[in-house]
Image (cartoon, rainbow, N blue to C red):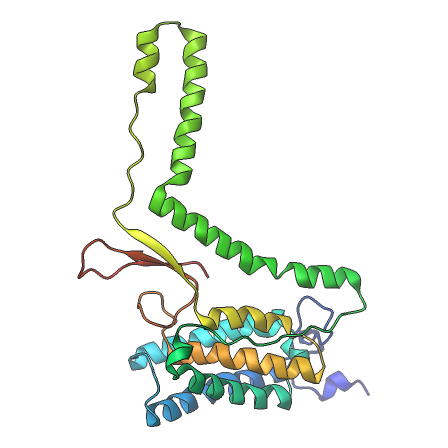
Length: 276
């Protein structure tokens, strides 16, 4: 008899190979959400509140919004991170050790300024083409960070705008010399003001949950090391998501990769542009 007849879910929903770009198992996805969100979220808040750990102020609506955000982020990492392969009891146990272990570490004064270094090792696959795609995808967060730096430079110094105006001047000079040799016309065309700087300044700030969320995509193998590693990075990522503010409308110690806009007024709260 076909085993798919004994399953509650259509066979087409399942994809278990660690070499596939997308993997999904509906039953494991339910377990994933229950273990890492629906149990972890209220449990962390109860324990953190009891021990007076640092928590962001949240209304019931904000809690509900953050839980939905955790589900959205979780679905992406479950499918692209192959947690239908990696998810196991090793992942669950290491997850809860990591989420509360990192919370204790984050309460130490010296730990508030930097992140601990977690050694992450990858299992080398037999398929070299897969290895290149696998390692090449690590450049995605690097590219996003570089783009954020470029946007910050443009916001603060208008470097792109200055380059654009310089090129535009050169094109105007060429066109003017072609049409006329009149020096007065040339001087008139060349008169232009420098681009005005923005009234505010920006800076890039990367938070720990963003870093470990990216690492969670690279523990996709059915091996105890990958399973434990997946639980560790998911636990630290979840600690930031649960304890802090995911919504970029609020400014605080937790968040993601943001551009913070510092207003010139002392009492003004800066706007933030979320990158991802």
